[in-house]
Amino acid sequence: MKSWYLPFRLLKPLGAAAASLAAILVLDVLLSAACGETPRWLPPLFGTDRFADFENRVTQFEDMKRSGSVRDDHLIAVLGLSQVRHDMDPRALSANDPWHREWLVLGTEGRNFRQIALPSRVLIHSRLRPATVLLMLAFSQTLPDAKYTADESLHMVLTNLRHRQFWQAARDCSWLVRHRLMFLEEATLFHYEATRRVRNLFSLPMSVTYTPAFDPFAPWPKLGRDGGLIAPDEWEGRKAMMVARSFANMGENFQSLVDLVRDLRVMGSKVVVVLAPETSRLRDLYPAVAVDAFNEALDEASNGEPLPVIDLRAVMPDAAFGGDDAHLNSEGREEFSAKMPALLELAPSTRPIR
Image 1 (cartoon, rainbow, N blue to C red):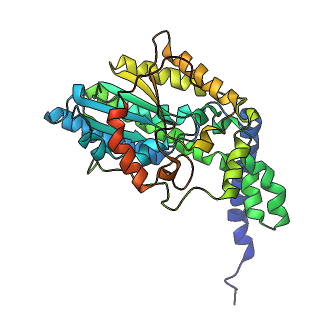
Image 2: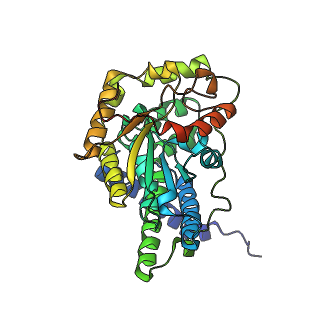
């Protein structure tokens, strides 16, 4: 009687699997050698979820403009870092606005200018033309793009091997795995650009490709806690980052702000930079090079036309912050959203910020 188990039958599938694995490893090595650790053709990490949030909310406002319930001359858009997303309540802003404008709040993660500029394309390419666009920024955004900094995963290989975390060590060694999120971001940008071109070809609204937000005036989830500031060890980590050498390589960061301001002005919008609220100790922490770099970025972005700046860094007391030194607690968000429209009447500065 012949045995059903014939090991030699596995040779072909095992050989195919080994060949596929070898091909992937060779491709990985070749990509690492050809592109290095900072491939310029890949975007920095900006967050595909944030891109989708912009699309949904802008789509709803575009539909409201088409129906006549929103007018460009009564529309004010707020772009910027995570303080925009988490510390501003659109309904409270509109309710406390003496001019009764509608507020389109579009905040994202804000480690640098590029993280704001990339998803802001959704507003720029829409049919909305806000009378005013507020860019809420912070000195910390002059830090270079994450893609231009050292890849920390490479330094973890030996540690993972010592702890017998072999799979994690193998992933750290792989160029493809280390850059997988950047490939995802690139796919998001490709998909966005393709759908935008198709819409433009047939003069279609954004709602044919994106789902309008259920409630475009709903506040985003809170980030700051209501139980005080960050722990001392976390604060020490923040202090370690805020040193002069951290701001040595700006990459394409400055150009992103220049392009963003230019594109917003081409839309016909008045662009005003707003410095986000921060605690007193965070304001004192920035090295002079960060402040100088920020002023240099604003000077380049102004392109000969003064760029107004409203400094709101000290407008909220330290007790209004929670979770860290840059995000407000629940009471702080309510207070800031109520006073924000009036704060826009403060005399803007076009001189270097200190």
